[in-house]
Amino acid sequence: MQSKKRKFIVIVGSLMSGLGKGIVSASVGKILQSMGYSAVPIKFDGYLNVDCGTMNPFRHGEVFVLDDGTECDLDFGTYERFLNLNLNADNSLTGGKIFKRIIEKERRGEFLGRDVQIVPHLTDEIKGHVRMVGEKWNADVVLIEVGGTVGDLENGYFLEAMRQLAVEEDVLFIQLTYVMSISPGEQKTKPTQHATRLLSSLGIQPKVIVCREDEPLDKDVKEKIALFCNVKADAIFDDPDLGSIYELPLLLEKQGMSEVLCRELGIAKKKVEFGEWEKLVERIKNPSKEATIAIAGKYTAVKDAYISISEALVHSGAKFGARVRVKWVETSEVEKGKKPSEVLEGCDGLIVPGGFGKRGAEGKVECIKWARENKVPYLGLCYGMQLACVEYARDVCGLKDANTTENDEKTPHPVVDFLPEQRKITAKGATMRLGAYDCVLEKGSVACKIYGSEKISERHRHRYEINNDYVKRLEEGGLGFCGKSPAGDIMEMMEWKEGFGIGTQAHPELKSRFLAPAPLFAAFLDACLKRQKK
Image (cartoon, rainbow, N blue to C red):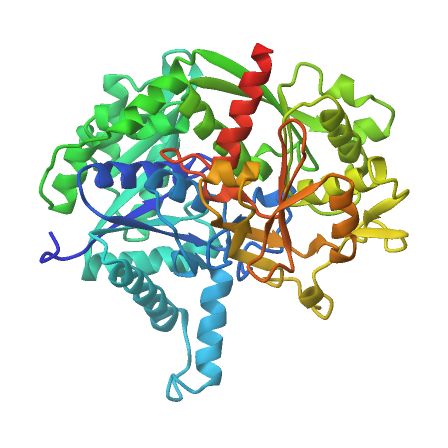
């Protein structure tokens, strides 16, 4: 197909947000991949932030970090997990990034005295970016997810750019909509009809409609949508709630998605081969064992804040044929008097994820201590590693009131402190230690055996580190710093000498894939399952 014209698929929403455009986009990409076509995703978000780095997880969910340090929307995690790609800054486009680029060009005088306008200057910038990504990746198909809902002021200019792109290139529009049921068997299509009419008023005609729903669409409902939305009946797809998001590509293909994609894009139909993907989905649907994992975090009220951790556990569960149940632990309850044994009752393992700030930190330290003393498998991620070192300093090394300076600037024992390069930083956006960094593992360590290599690379997002002034004292107390930066000046990974207890300054969950679980998560779950047998 490389000699043929590149194709573009634009996935848009309707009148309601939160329907899962990212999962649909990734599923369409997976189907194309399974036919042998290369597909690369782009996501547009209309907010004026340049990136997601300064956004509160309570409002926006997890901040996903790419190899190059780009802080982006959580949908990028879905893309990478489905498509097994390492994306970069080019794949993420925000309103802030586009406007910033246009204004910088105007200041440099690149518009030759023209008055700079949304059309054509901004829309041309968007089209040029989309084409550039396709060219860089040498992609057969570029998948473009448009964030937000139809009619939003903040994505109107982007939809206009996509309308123009459809005049100039081969573009297929896919609309994701919601078909509600007033009562069982009584499905309402008016919202879908109105959303499609609104798109049509913008010059956009979807050729495929994917329907989120409470129950499968009746034949007459599909025919009604087809009639009023100018879409062929076989191009209307059910997207029900599923036990696993990884089942969606299989379900869409069962309904004939590859046939419709190939027809509408004008590309050759090839056999769809999911291979190992189908076997893993079956293991998730029919597990032979089960484990309960406690996640003691700060944003437990918003599960999307830890979506990469949840998915990494799903990936590991699929590997071992185990259902992983997550117990969300609000550690501020421990600070109010609850015992760690109470909040962690029935849990086979404990994860303390990344985070910021003092709230709940002492509760996390108490939970870590309980896990260590009772040999409950522990995985500390970023902040979770730092607090594990604080706990060890206090309770094993006898360093009373040891702490991180993030939570106590006057602590007598700053076991965790600012990275040196962070001290002079005043801006908040994109200024942490971000992206993929190498780590050298100690030969013979548990971590080295898990990875099967002495040199690894994981993604980071932090401002604080283990204070090197305390490394020797912690090691003398029995804590093993099994992973360090190549220069040896940053403690990247630690492990307990007894039981399974590993902390990493990195976020290995960000590189976990459905077909390739993160090694630390797989080893952690394996330890949890083995502990059940004792």
